[in-house]
Image (cartoon, rainbow, N blue to C red):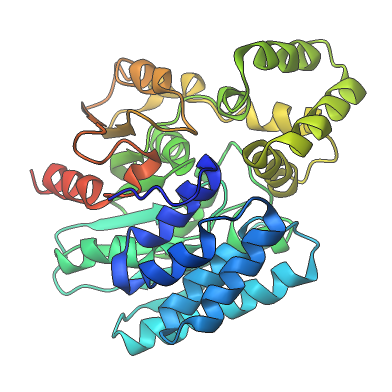
Length: 369
């Protein structure tokens, strides 16, 4: 169920990222009481810090600290402390709840990528999973553990621009297939399923296009073009103005405009600041140019495996036109299946937040079929 708790769409969506797990991730009443009237990032931080203090369960504290640090700037010392508390409580919670996995550090270029392997006796298949724009792997464990229960071995990993990688200056990049290849090499994988969550939907397609060890790939959810995603948050006239400044290489004018937008929009402020941080960019122009390289149209003909495309009809991050483009975009794929989740069934949000088991069950049915 997708709850309407806070009138700010961005805040409300993030609150539901926790509530979708029910009592496993937090006390709904405590969260609602603290978050209903939050209006800015400072109030958000204080509210979820209060939720953490009120919580007794390890995983409740973990998700509360995750949300507390979510909107803080990367150089804010409170973000570093909240992140540390978050990870500590996640691992205590996993141990308490009997969630068993092996942790690895996978060498990659100038650093290492963190990975969790969830072993399974006589697995049906192996599913390799990555997140997207704002992720670290601990927050996905409850979500992907359903695959483990159904007989699949799962490997979760953080790639460039995610989790611990960003702290090593391994920045977000369009050629994510290189990171995926390093993971498959490390575990000596010759055949697998690749599942990309959120912006990871692009990474799923990119990786499958260049690494034929991937026999099935899943866009959870659909993703077509990073440039469009990063301008889609604005009204149409503002989108036009931003694109005109980028095309004209008006770097300082773009910087001024984006800073003004950040003062007025919570959603835009987070997306733009996070974008500069994870791409290692000094300007918004540089960020847009880098994220514009994240596009499916440049690799779609190279995809030859089975493809599953998921989308929510009211996704406020990914335009619905991305879904309409992608379902017709893979002429050489072995097969393509697509599924658009609706408001009526409760799966209309990005990555089906509010009813994520719709997507999990759809993926399982597709894999088993």
